Length: 112
Image 1 (cartoon, rainbow, N blue to C red):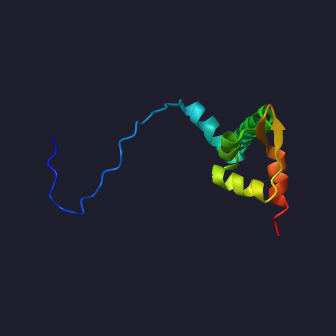
Image 2 (cartoon, rainbow, N blue to C red):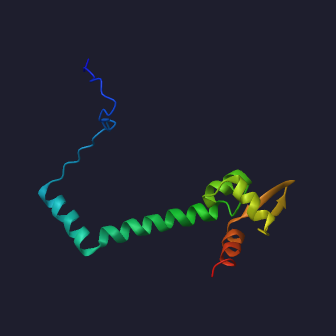
Image 3 (tube, one colour):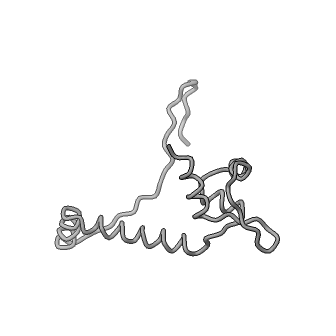
């Protein structure tokens, strides 16, 4: 076991993270390098990200409060404050549902 010095300002070691090694042939490396240079890899990554965002947004346009707060990046108390200030809600199956597009439109109304 490693001896720990008795100093109040001991330097903390970063947590150990696993390292993954990926090996490419020279030809594969050149193709990847060329993709980075001409932007094809960047375009592919952006296209994948856009598809994922669209799929997520279309999956559930109306959410219960806890999921809505997570989606909006806010706390549930902030969502309650916004609702008190006029954030539109929908009542479905006896519960309040928050619409993603309604939230976006509501927030845009406060832009200056």
